Length: 151
Image (cartoon, rainbow, N blue to C red; front, top):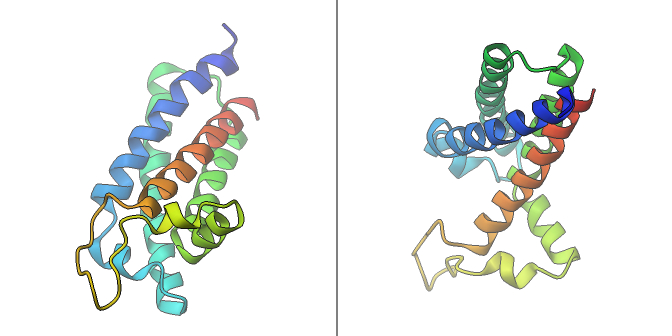
């Protein structure tokens, strides 16, 4: 198996685990509540979330890179983290991912389980928007792992 293949095989699960921890344990409730606002407060809270998120993913990949002696270059490491951070910020602004879901015919699924204004105050993690958000992140973590391993 090539060095790039081993680096990819180790980096992808590392990114997935780090993503789960950063998105659900490190992100503050305040950031989660405000990051989708269409104003400077939304942009600021999303940026703070992505900064802490990228700290977790960078730390995890750096640890695995160091401990396992992976064939990752500093440039590959940086570019992989940049891909992850930019795509994470884009999706977490929420209106962007909602619009994309609409463009590809998934608007109804995106709204599945969402509280109805004035009728249903039952927020839940079991929404279509949450599932599409996580699937988006996993897709780009796959790409980030490839970039990390190949550059």
